[in-house]
View (tube, rainbow, N blue to C red):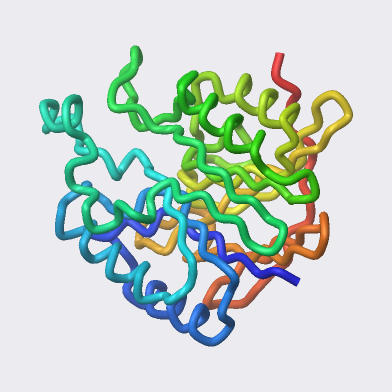
Length: 258
């Protein structure tokens, strides 16, 4: 069995110190094969937040891949940096960002869902650019045929069973393309509540799995991360909280994109 820890929305600058320490203890005690962090490592994309987040991720001592979340890009009130050098503060975590992982027959493929600017008011919502999708599909094309393909991005590609929304532009088109390319799982964060729902397209089922948060910015769930147990092509999602663990039962299928 392969064990992966899926964590998201830690928001250094608004992190929950008890939850951060607890997660580190679980990693040290259980030694997962990898940690997949699906974005919003920081709260305000400040250098000190990236340094704190980078130190924490490196201290885990296991392979880590990190996606960029909307909070990891400088905010609206810093438009010059946001538009022209949004990634200049990433030095502390640069080697982990969008790092593909190949572990025990599992390929973890990054998918960027953030944008420095959009033609709508709320730039915190998701967007899958043609270039981001092409890169993910190119990486999938190189995966051995017997591997399980897990795609990791920050925003849910389509709306799921949570109150929080992603409203990801072109996410539905990306999900169709990923399903047709052979992806079995799409991991995300952003909405701060865990979920595990199936999406079916042309006879293929893709699991859409979202993680909670380890920050103080909780919504309907306490601070949590997901444990993914992988045996062959079977995946079990367990929501881990300091209050106790629960295995997620697959929810109702989400809508088929038009």
